Amino acid sequence: MLVHLGLPGCEALATVEQIRKAAPETPIAVLSEVADEELAIKAVKAGSQDYLVKREVDLSLIERSLRHAVERQPDQNALAVKRLELGDSETKLHKQSQIL
Image (cartoon, rainbow, N blue to C red; front, side, top):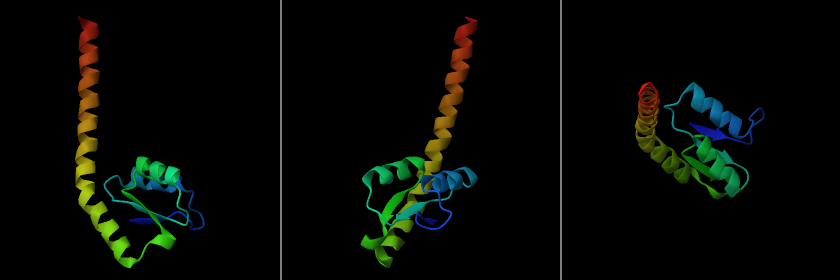
């Protein structure tokens, strides 16, 4: 999914976070009007696979970015599952150590 941060009603990174919560397995790339490295880092931390600056991209770059996002998403999904499993294991281990 390509998310344009400059569209009306688009609350910058909140939109990425809402999409990630509603559809965690959907690959996301962000398109922005501004070249802002800090915003780009925040977008990736919020769940975007890529951050593109509108004036610097053409159709082939958008296609490549989306293709790569789709290719990476299964790995991201598997990593998220492993993190949840690890958290569950840590919780169980902590509870067991309290019993002893």
